[in-house]
Length: 193
Figure 1: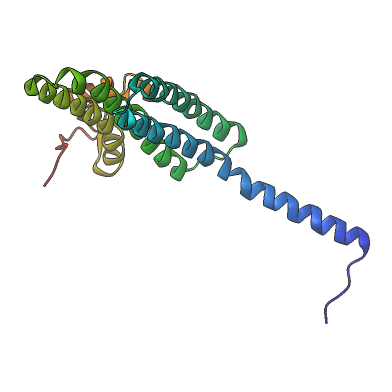
Figure 2 (figure 1 turned 45 degrees about the horizontal axis):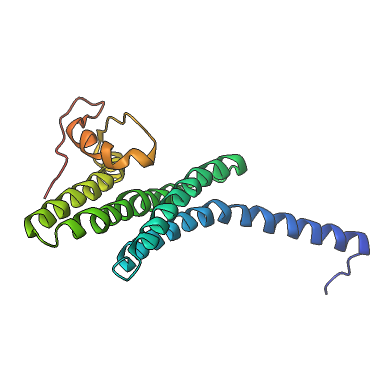
């Protein structure tokens, strides 16, 4: 038989349930902010692609504004996670993906569409050079996150001179070049087949 709770016990029970629900929902806040950062990066890519129409300057301006907004949300998500005590490995990995989209892929596509594509209409070699330069930027943006995750599992350490993700594209190549053996002193290969 179910015992009946007094009105005071019911209020206490509801208060406890609300408190537990609030604790669970705190974990969603930093990830939601990170997803907004990814949305801004993706929207910047879409604006860069849509710049082929009648008014490309308008689209390029919005693409750049969205990248700035992505930077704001990227800085905010970590602060919120630390302030609420809700830092998780999932959040770290999601933030790394957001950095790749918002500070690797989106700026490279914006640069390609704004500068190299238009300049390369008359000269296909210039367009190819622009494509290679933008790909290099994206690759350098992807390397730090991949090296960090692989380093945790494969046992090599990566020299990180700057933890700010907005410098990721410039930092990626130096991380690859300056990768050093782990503390064990054994040299490890960065890439294994």
